[in-house]
Image (cartoon, rainbow, N blue to C red; front, side, top):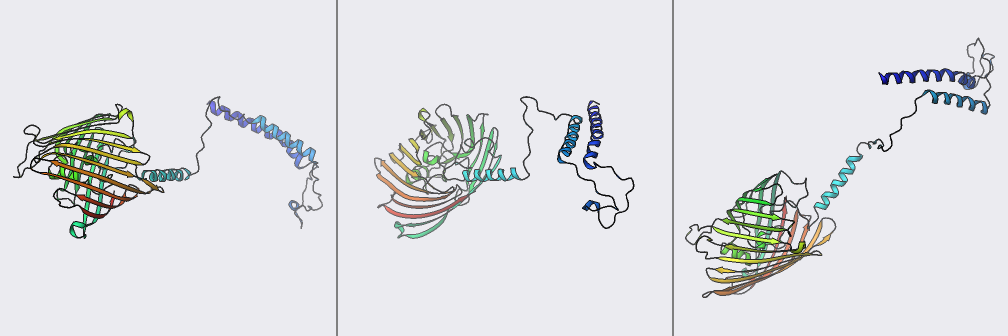
Length: 438
């Protein structure tokens, strides 16, 4: 009702203003006396300035009188209309919606810039949890996906001096998998169609709300050797090297195993991370499954110095019985001004006797535009066997460079000169690998 009364009052005032302004408007328009009878127009039209059957057109008012009449009309209208509403002190001005499509164009440009930034080489991207257990944790909030499809493929060509540089082509990697991420649960299944052991990862991971404590169950990487835990896509060389191959594949210490593992991750305490668990034992010469193995690793960033990470890991075969094989490794990684240096020293005992090994790898990332990059890499490895009956050394020197397109494609050009266990003389090998992932 209140609104209706105000509206009615406004109408009345407007009507009074019109009535009061009519005389002024009439004077402004027709200052002279109007003729009672107006004859029909003849040839000339009054609107065009002609005459109407003997009636002279009215003379216009002088400018001074015309302005006075207009001023009276405007003053009457101003008194009749209500005063304009003014915002209260401290109130925000009304928002004005932009033109349709303006926000869409701005958003599209921002999304394109974000995509370019995400595709920049050297930055973390979506990866398999089996390859990178911190792939979900290191993503900004709101970007973690509930379901992720993981896949990559790599083709490799090699020419080895040991085989008179005979070319050999192969599919080095043909991996596909799917993972899901919930607030307190992650799960992943990954297979490699190019490997004799197709199943790579198949595990469930439980965690608390703050991701400080985790429990793994299934098949996944054992927490041993920093080189083994590194994602094969992020590793700047084509293989993990002769030392890792000799320990993991030849003597079955580490690698992917069925097991149960607990993990503690405390970022505020120098980035402390502790992992330990029991895993399915190896297979002996007769094909029988041995008893369970144990593995553990501790890593941290001293004094919260983020570029530096150090760690210690250990592996014990048949931990609850004979423990015929065991090893301890210390590793360090330094990221500084585009350089990445990783080093690892290992000591342990094999059925052949005690052994020691050292690994060092250096890489540098050179950005070329927003998406392209060149990555020179160089590495050296050494292995020493000090058994009573078997003694020997192995070594490897590798160098090359990688060409990266974002984080989805890479081309690796590599040359290696190595003396592997069992070789009589060192050999030279050239290789090229092309890989892509989605």
